[in-house]
Image (cartoon, rainbow, N blue to C red; front, side, top):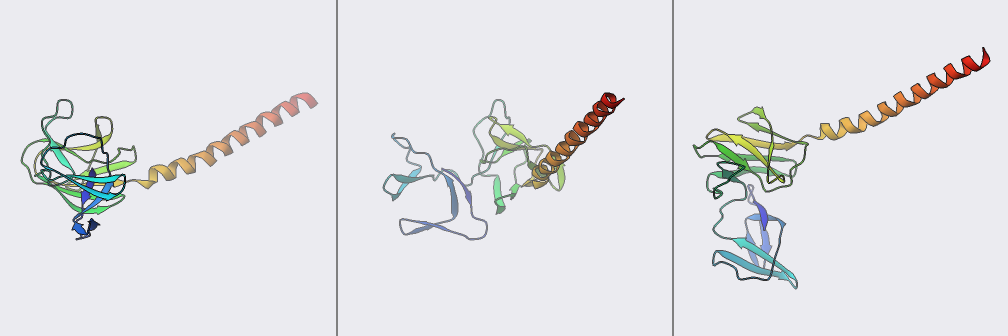
Length: 176
């Protein structure tokens, strides 16, 4: 189960109980589950799995290449929108804050208001490098998508003008 805790007291209700998180994806395999896992049947064929030992969704890693166990305790979600996520890392170690969402080249990040590069953990999850306690923002930059839509017509126009120019040159050579 990947989920974001709800920063604005929004709740998700399952089996008549209210939970303070927003489910994003669930994966379930037939197996023996550790005692820290809470399984709830939502409907036939769909079971919600929650690891009660994990206090949040984003986490801290000391190294992306050889990660130790993730630290969930020092990363707190402070505000969530589908395209704009705010976190607070309260630890004092340098390392990486990883978000359990699909990385995309249009995600941008800031640490304490300064632009930073967004790296990838396991080539899948966005990760931002921190050097200690930090306020983190990850947001989706629609401008990258819009630039692509602007480039296509410009490229088409250039190709059309080139074809017209070459055609006119050929026509002039034929008539002279």
